[in-house]
Image 1 (spheres, rainbow, N blue to C red):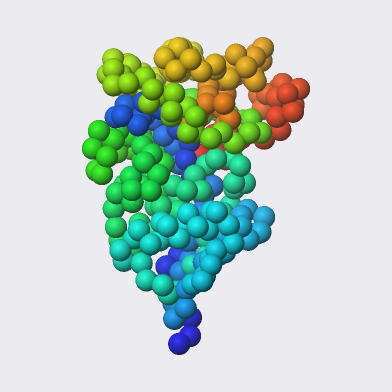
Image 2: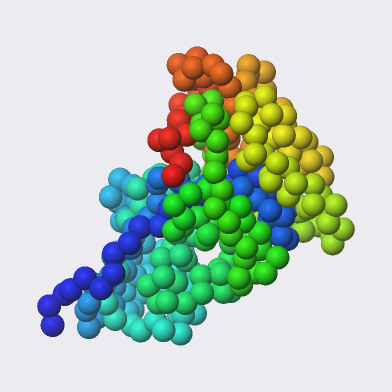
Length: 293
C-alpha cells in the first residue's frame, strides 16, 4: 500500500502572562499562543514509526514497533498506549520550529495534536499524563489570547481575550538562557495547602482588569501587584530582583518562575532594551507581534 497523508496540522506554543501556579486550581489566567509551535504529519502505513525533529531538523525522538532511542521516546510510547484509539501502524512525524529549551510547549502541543488526530478530549489526556492546568492545551489551536479557568478540569472555561493594540508596541519578551522545570515551583505551591481561595480571587480580578486597560502605566501597576502576590505567597524571588535586577524597565516572570521567558514593558526602543540585556548576556528578545499570535 502506498503512503498517503492522513493528517497534517500545527499546534501553537504558549506563554502564561498571569495566573502562574494558581491557574492549577481555577484562577482566571491570561495566556497567549505563540507563532512558534509543532507540526504533526501522519502517513498511512502498515508498520508503525515515529520521528520527532527539533528546530534544527535534528532527530531527537525515534520510536518504532520494537524500541525507543530515549527516555522521551519511552514517555511518548506511554502516551500513545494510553490512547485507546491508537493502533501500532502509520508513520508519524513531529517537527518543532522553536528551540526546545525555550519552554514554549513541546509536551502540550504533542498532547493537543494527538487528541485532535484521535478525536479525543485533550484535557482528559493531559490530566491522565501530565496533570497540568491545561492552559497550554487551550492555546494550541487558539487564534487569539485567552482567559482560562479550569475549575472543571475536563471542560475548562476558555474565552477569547484581546491585548490592547496600545500596549503591544511597549511589550517585549526576553529569554533568560535557562529552561525552568516547573515541578519545583508547583511543589512549593502544592505545599501551601487548600487555603488559596483569597489569592485565587485576587489574581483572577487582576487578570480581568488588566485586559480592560489601555495604557502602559496601568499594565505595569497591575502586573507589578500580581508579581508581589506570587512572590510573597510562594517565597520565590522575582526576576526583577535577581537576574534582571537593576535594569531600567519593568519585567515580569512568566510561567514557571526562574527561567524561560520574561515579559518586558517599557517605552524604551528595542535597541536600548537589547543593549541593557546584552550586559547580562541575554541576546534573545522578541517583539510582541513577531512572537505572539
